Image 1 (cartoon, helix red, strand yellow):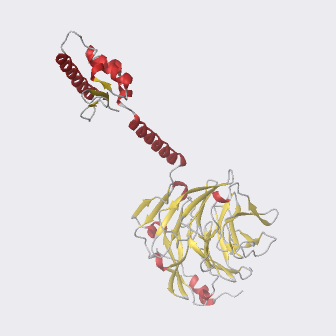
Image 2 (tube, rainbow, N blue to C red):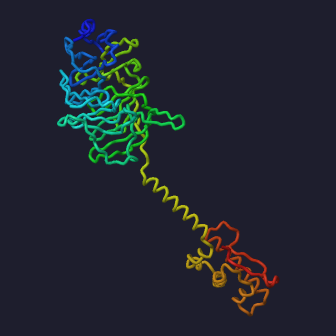
Image 3 (cartoon, rainbow, N blue to C red):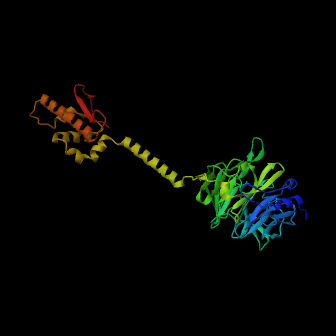
Length: 438
């Protein structure tokens, strides 16, 4: 077993207070790209290419892990811990002391940068890339078959997220939430393929194996990543300028405004539930780091703001209601334009006639009967007593027409100046005729 003597000496140094150096790791260790910091149950560990260091034991325990030189991911819950190679396929369980290989498989090389999670004690993954494809699949490791199997989705391609790698996500209450991955992008102009940030959130319901689109992210999480889950269904994410926690099931984003350490100095980080704090690698130089410990409350600070993770799209029936409302208003407006004075009078004639004199009613009846045509004054004069002189009849007719006109305007609250239209008779210009305006 190749254990660095300076490393062991330095690891014997116990941590004291938050933000103080727990131990300084030698430069040679960090030339190993496979160095990983993780926690399981009450202990935290450093894993290099050949050794596993239990840094929470006194004295620090160091042993060879005997695994092949691969890049691994570690994921755990309260009871289970799994180590899987970065491209999926090779799966180990972890009991706090040693790794036990579970699979009878090989390195897939098709699901790099997948999102790992544990459901019902079983190891699962979502997404990843490899062999020139971006994945949107969910896989489950079957310990009885010792193979990885595909979980079938009942959603169509149009109602599923695109293939992506490096997503952030959470598994809560039998739902998987994924967002902010990089998806496949093909530029037909240059014929180049690249990955672009996907700022939308989806959930997968394991009760019916269906995807559901939830909405667009309100915060740019393109550079954020999670070091490890916290056991209260809340995950901590950070990049060079922000430290946030996400609860997808509640659509709750908590942004910590004054973290206890500059987040850009963090190279790797793991939460230790037993100590309620974080071990983290602090970047000193490209090949030099320090191991620190900080209490959770001290890291997060006291100042924070709450926001939504995503904006919820309006339901289809909202848009349907808008369309129906617009159609109704359009129909009403169109029909309002078609409603004539004649139709208004006929609709409300009983109330209208109560304010009209008998002669005005007779005039109106003749006008309605002829509408929209004109009625000559000669015919209208026949409604009056023939014993009156012609001039008296004309004055009486004129007075009744003017009175009828004003009463129509007042009754229907019209903005027009007149409801009647007069003109000279076409056949005899010496006579006049009148009609109801539309």
